[in-house]
Length: 204
Image: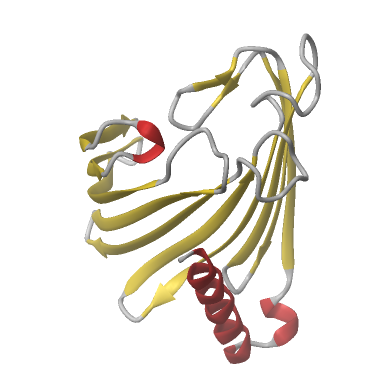
């Protein structure tokens, strides 16, 4: 499944470059970010490691929608490098663009867990496919998330399926309010119980 996703990303990227001028299509934008955190907190809010870490991200994007990202986390005190989840490297290949009447985003993220640079052992591949459609002030979208684990991984893999609605509205050209509601079904990924989740947010 992961090979299929990677091939799809490359095929879409190639198709986009064929239709555009090669120079402009492959003009890169580069960003580099780094931070020191008191603990490693994952995107879901879970604490992956409770010791201070140095984390850095290198992002390389192209006008055709293809992008590559390298993210690194390393402990800075109290731990030995490459022995805990404070040490991690993520390699991401993705694409964002339009296909017919829909906006599409797809990526595959190889999470190289301890020990890093020992590909295949205890690692995980996180993939996502998102299809969305703008309907006036609202956006309707469907998302498929997949976790595939390598041999000897601590956690099992799994899938999440989401169907969400988001939108934003400007009031009096002063305040911009955006929000979303995302019902999600988790089949039991990463050792959690299967069932429905409800995610959402509001921002002004």
